[in-house]
Length: 271
Ligand SMILES: C[S@@+](CC[C@H](N)C(=O)[O-])C[C@H]1O[C@@H](n2cnc3c(N)ncnc32)[C@H](O)[C@@H]1O
Image (cartoon, rainbow, N blue to C red; front, top):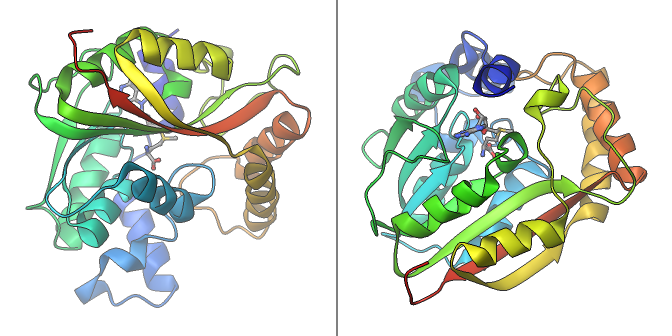
């Protein structure tokens, strides 16, 4: 298992070029690309940009907030947090092709000076203690077997008063998932836990859960639309999108996955 299975699932050459080409097909000016030209396509999670905006509101992200985006992908959410909310973002990801694409896209839309892009593992973050107001993680924990280490690292890098903002697919009671799904082509790349177990690990890492919302009904609606869009050939970032979104829709409808958004405040004490 592990790192190779995860990065192989995601790693594709020319992701930045593919995304820019799709934005240009949709009407963007390639000589003056704006963050909002990329936003409809670059949020690699359930409900896309809408979920990022909702999580940002719940997390209370304001101008100057120091945000670490853990498992940042090609950097769509990081760009939205920098561009729309004025945050200063450090975007960390394990997949070299995602890190390269994120840095290139930041540069293309003029956000390179507000976002640092770092290659690294969420369970051993190459970031200093106490340096962030928000640790932000969307749809990366599904690839991470060591979730205890993920949340302990989040706690370690948070400043006093900091918070964890998460949005993830978790295991439902309906049994093992049908594969492939968008985050995994093979069983060794998928690591889902039930929501109660995730919540226990977050609390054990030194957090108090303030918001815990089930977004599964909205997710099912989104997956239906994603299957339809994929059938029309409108997905640019994923191999076999019809099959993968089709399985994800079935997994959600059969209760094999649930989708949770949560905010947890760092406890005052040492975890
Ligand atoms: C489905 S994408 C989500 C990307 C981004 N958070 C978003 O919502 O647009 C999952 C990302 O998690 C990254 N990832 C998986 N395991 C990781 C780990 N252990 N450390 C850091 N990143 C990881 C993958 O490389 C991939 O870019």
